[in-house]
Image (cartoon, rainbow, N blue to C red; front, side, top):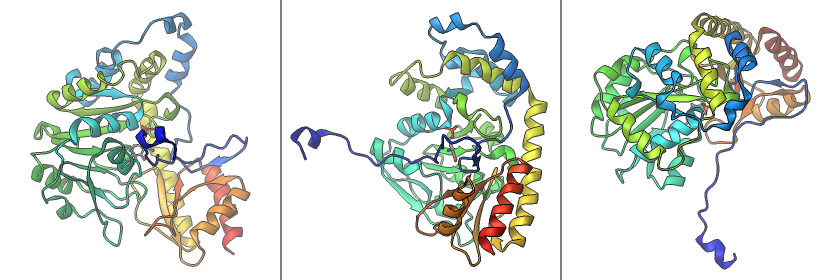
Length: 352
Ligand code: PMP
């Protein structure tokens, strides 16, 4: 190692799912929405004035997007924080809230960015093993800690923690901040948002990447007490103030306005998920009940790594991790019915 390298921060980065460039790929590997964003978003793109790009964007919490989100969730604008995808929101929340010097807690099988942020920010952490059926045991989060974070529904498992159990965790941890990452809540989960009225230490994080079909626009947000949000803004504006670009801030507004379209595409995905569950079962797959736009499935006989590689030969991408406890599982994003038909045609050939 060269002398200068000794003074370099070394981290193992998060590995996102592949974004293959090849045309005609069936992409069921990054939980994107298979449907386009709302037609109102399309209309707005066409109307947007390109000369507006000359100006810096406004601070996100002063924008119409903050106002729309506040109205949508019936909170005040001071209770909304907006970031570049929920990854940015979560990363800022780690930096702001997890400074107790004590280990923060999250599940052993969960969003694999959490340990990366903990490492990069020097935050100690402890993971809590999910039960055999991949559910979170709330009792594991009642011990002394420096903060708690978990996705609900969890990823990549898809399991949902009921609101009573979420409240149990929040109520028992009022000396630290509890973050509930609701990236997948719109596919049939029960949100922790109503708990915000009771708990000042709760932060609920959401994204436009899944249920609002706008992963490319990079919009995420958090809802929490005005106090929590002001701390978050102070840290954010100490790192980089202008991260949210103007077009995304404007397009996000249109997506929030079109609630009918949002509900329609979520409903379609849930219906396809139900059909996919039946078909997976009949092919010999097992999986926990999913509340997300994906299913985490293992085959009784054929190894996941083999199916994963074989599916690529059919130009179908799903997600697979060579990780303890989950190496025999595939996370399959719910696509359109036609995409799922193609998946099952391939699976039937691979498995026979
Ligand atoms: N949380 C969870 C649980 C996720 O799976 C993802 C998607 N990778 C994110 C947050 C981040 O999504 P985005 O940054 O696109 O909002």
